[in-house]
Length: 280
Image 1: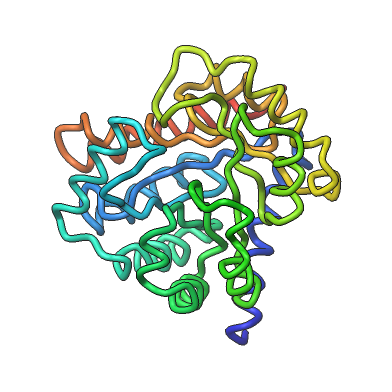
Image 2: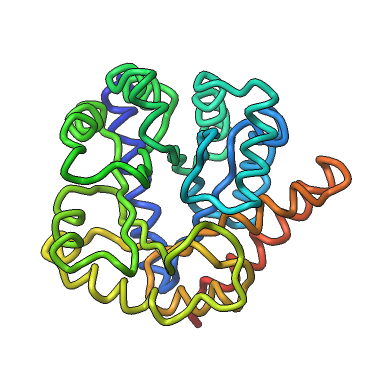
């Protein structure tokens, strides 16, 4: 297979995975794990564990020193990864080895500054070559995203934008017209972390996002922030195309006395969540 075909295949794999979940009358389970935590190899093993447990899609976090969207759990993991010397090359290695080992679509979730410093063309080319399906960019305004989208499209990478309950309908329409892969709907205002309740804001946000022209063309809407157990996953799966879980996985790895115990724990949680996203 040619490089171009492989790259097209990765973004298509993302679309096919979301479509397959929909055809099975369930939401897709999307797991988030930071690269380099607890080590680079440990993070790769964690991806293998969550996919073995039932995750359909994985987001690999690019650790950042000022993670404005991330709560205390992910900030702690990012700090461990950064003190361990994690680099963008390690993030790309994580994507490559995780995708090769699992066959799952792997995206990178990152703030804009590291990409800007690394070089947009270089980053998109290397992410595509590593088998990445796309990128989630929580702090890149859609009106300033033309350069990114140009290179992402060139390398057949999905551009996933984040919307929040505060997003106005006009902005939702702009984002769904510009984005690809899926829309990341933040279930509530604030940073990442587990919550006792996901809340009604998420359902209303999904409804408003789906009402836009871009979403009417079939762009899925996945909900993240606050989901940590099967009951919450079931609640969100009733109205969203995908359920995104991050802090709950990371906390299990943080709390584990050793890596094998942590991997068993994240695999087990993925299994419980995978059962939860089945709407029946």
